[in-house]
Length: 230
Ligand code: ADE
Image (cartoon, rainbow, N blue to C red):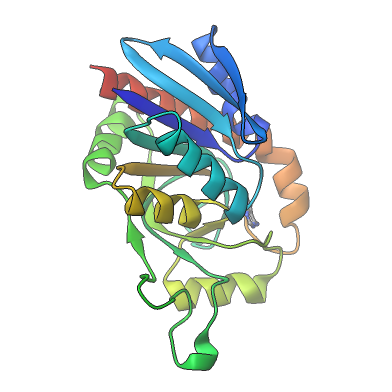
């Protein structure tokens, strides 16, 4: 079994690399990939760089070049739902691209012909995350995540994304990773810890909480990997 663990920024995967300790670094397609053996499973770990294009490239590379059979994403997100506060964890049930817009042709936001507005994450891993949350004594919410090539720091935009997609949190990679995994039939799990509220203070909050929230998410994802290894 080979599992991909992916983040978008160095801060999102460094706690994972620290925990694993020893790994092999491979440079490929303009990025670094880290391979390790961990509790009897093979891991490939990488951060993609921010946004839908880089995350698409990295997810596809992890699957097609490195042979990953499952993909887990760990990172931070901006909260839309008022029940999500800085440091809280959200597991994506399904994901959409909030910046995909051919509504001029009568299509809904987030839709292109032969695509789908929402892509569902793997139900088995979502179930497993409930057990992990219980084991860790953590309160983890499930919800819809909306993705776009935009750091949202604007109440109006955030509320529009919330009402248009029923989204609980937003970020910049999950929706594109979902497209890749869905097309290549690789089960995926997307976890985010809240770093900000996607409002006018978002950039300050993000800078302040990126590291601690990324660590929260990484710890949880590693517990998921532990369960998958059992
Ligand atoms: N990731 C974390 N916070 C975010 C925000 N406000 N907008 C987009 N991506 C984010």
